[in-house]
Length: 364
Image (cartoon, rainbow, N blue to C red; front, side, top):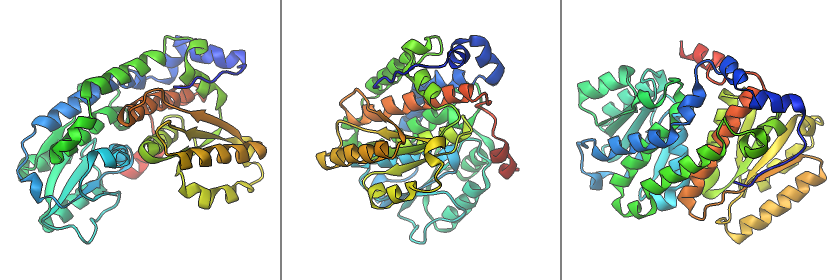
C-alpha cells in the first residue's frame, strides 16, 4: 500500500506505540483475531470446497445471499469480483423476505456468524416455502441446528481462528466460505483465485501493519493518527467497492466512527453537490479514495478531477493504491490494510473495538 507521512503529535504516537494501551482498550483481543485472517480464509475456503452439496450446480439460475451487518460483507466483496467469479445473477438481501423471483432454481445462501439473527432465520423459512436450494454459513446457533435438521449443506465457521468471538473479526472465515462455494458453482473461475497467493498477500500486509511496528514504519498506524476523531467518507470503484463497504462497516463498529462508502462513477453524478453543507463538514470529516492501477482510464481521470475539486474546497483527501497488479490480490491487500487501519483508529479514539452497544441492543 502507498505510505502516508506527516508530522504527528507525540501523544498520538505514544498511544499507538505503547502496548499497554492495546491491552487496556482491546480487552477482548480483537487484534488477535485480525492476525489470523489468512488462516481464517484458508479454513473457510477448505470447508466450502469439501461440503457435500445436495443439488446439481447446473440447476442454479440465480443466487440470493442473505446476511446482516458484518455477515454480508463477504457477499459484497464477492459481488465486486463478479467478472472473475460469478456466472449467474447475484443479489444481496438484508431484510426479512426474499425477492419475489426466488424459486426452485434459486440458491439461497444464509449467512449469520452467530446463527441467531432473526432476519436470516425469517428468510430461511421463506426459502423453504419457495422450494429454493439452501446453503448455510454460520459458526453455530439456531442456523446450525436448522441446517442439521433440514439436511442443508453447512459451511461451519471454525471459531478457533477468531478468539475475540466478534463476528466482523471472523470476516476471513466467511469470505473463504463464500468464495470457496461460488468457485464450486462456477469452476472455470478458479483460474482467477490462487489461494496460496491470496494467503501470502494477506500475511505480507499483516506483517507490514503489525502492532509491533512503530508508527514511523507502520502506514496503517500513520493513517489512523491522521484521522483521529474524524468522520470518514470512502470513494471506491469496480473490484474495490466491496472493500470500501467493508471498511465503512469496520470503522462504524470498531472505531465508533461515522463512515460511508460511495462508488465511482455514480458519485460524480450527485455526491459532490452535497459537500457544500453543512459548512463544518470539511472540518470534521476526511476523504479516503481507493484507487487502482487496474481501473479503466476513464475512471482514473474522474478520480484525479474529483480529488482536485475536493482539495480546492479544503477537504483532506488520502489516496490509497494497492501495490499488487492482480485484481483479486488487490482486494485482499486493500482489505487487510484498511481493517488494520480501522483497528488502530479505535485505539487512537480510545474506544473498545469489540463492543457494540447498539448492535447488541437490536439483537435482544
